[in-house]
Image (cartoon, rainbow, N blue to C red):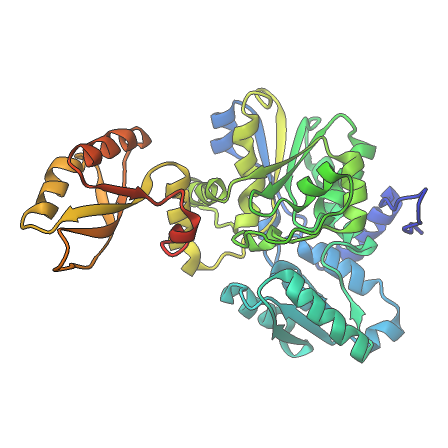
Length: 424
């Protein structure tokens, strides 16, 4: 049995262990399609295939690792019950496994978890699970879960830094290699704590060593990229939490060691780019994915030249997206693409100033989408916060020039994080 040995030996999932995991989970985990994407194949002049883990019953790949871990526990441990911490998808996988195996489970989730994921977790677990919302991040929930684990003697089901979990996630690689008709040149996969990439990369290095393995993190939570740069596991002080399924402050120790050896490249993708991919998938392919689920596809633009004529696989890791987030997703996408801009506009306190701004400053295709103004009678000028949506990013500089020429320009807010956070 593979173990994590100190110093000279590092745990790596064996092919035999992953095959056993594949057999163990086969009755409850779907063999998801490896489907060609006509949209992205045409766009990048490549054969782009999507591994649709968003079609799992719990709508993410996390069921693989969770079920493999829990179903492999001895009876005496199962009788004590299990506990986990998760931002959503691992929670649903654990809940589903608890229900199927009739095991009592406690699931800690950050208080910031989208309500849709909380409700789905409770639904999948039913009477077998207790959901506890605690803290603002995964790491907060993890600390609370660990405290209760020690107090009640429960078995902790780690979302990514666990051998059986890694082996469960690695079963995706076996499926991909069985489903692919031709050798795979590139595989793109999202990374949060690293369990998915640790498992997949180990199988590809053994069974398809010529495949280039690209890991993707959100730009606001570069835990693995920072750790690889430092040569050790680094815990980030602050992270951007928007990509809730892939934003952790610290990657798994096992996963770091494996990824350090196996990854060809580790990159970060801006959250706005991820949002644009979510909208594109919905509008063009009728696919609903969560931010983490869009990360692999979002990375293709950065490899456009390298993947021409190649066989490429992107792992669509999940589709647990709350509809109430769509307004923010659209906003972030517009900001990233240079189509949405916020300004402090200085209006002279005279009749006709707003009319002049609309008629003489705005371009024919510009649209005001946000306006906050408070008239000050004792001042000659009154500032307003104005959001403007453009049809073409090239219209931005002419807009600013017209604002300055007519003395309306006050301040550009998109690059001011302290003020801008209140607007999106």
